[in-house]
Amino acid sequence: MVFKLYAAPHVAGGGGIVALALAEKQVPYKFVSVNMEAKEHKTPEFLAMHPFGQVPVIDDDGFVVYESRAICRYIAEKYADQGTGLLPKGSKERIIFEQAASVEAANFYPAVIKIMGEAFGKPRRGLPVDQALLNEAVAELSAKLDVYEVILGKHRFLAGDEFTLADLFHYAYAPLLAGGGVDVMASKGPNVTRWWNDLMARPAWVKLKAEGLNSK
Ligand SMILES: N[C@@H](CCC(=O)N[C@@H](CS)C(=O)NCC(=O)O)C(=O)O
Image 1 (tube, rainbow, N blue to C red):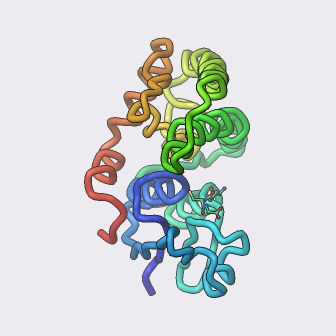
Image 2: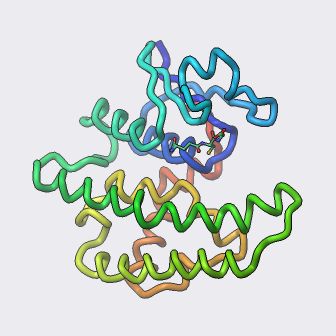
């Protein structure tokens, strides 16, 4: 049976990073578009798959998983022998990977999501942007990236010299920031700039952005 990805029809958020993990691993999948405006994610059928009624969700031959980072780990483990590595094999390397993944979840993502709420969420709902809150959120992300500058001065990617899921998790929303006039990713030191340019140039990402979420 086909690997199914339930997500909103744009390359963003959790659906975006799951699609990117599938692309890096060269896994074919069937994309099931969830219409969030029609509240398809709150139907009893959907809530049976994801009790919080959110996207993304995967169904791999009856094995249902939600939470995008957990889904990405599942894909990387299941398809360990194909495509990009994504997860280091040694036990110490795996812990360093988990450390980097936690840094994304605890430091990077909360700051990015605040910016998204102000710069994208409010205008979409017809609400005025609170410039002071937005400035505060950008300053918070900028301070986190100053620490990334130090980390990325020691190795090419966040968990070492190989691209891993710890890097991949950063694609959820940060690629959208520049389009919203928040170019903080491009305005940091040379190590963050090199890392971010490398991420944005990855062939799997360039192709996914161009083609969108679709079965290949
Ligand atoms: N931590 C979750 C976040 C999922 C999430 O917030 N999804 C949003 C769309 S990107 C959603 O479904 N929102 C609808 C809702 O929460 O009701 C993950 O990474 O999968």
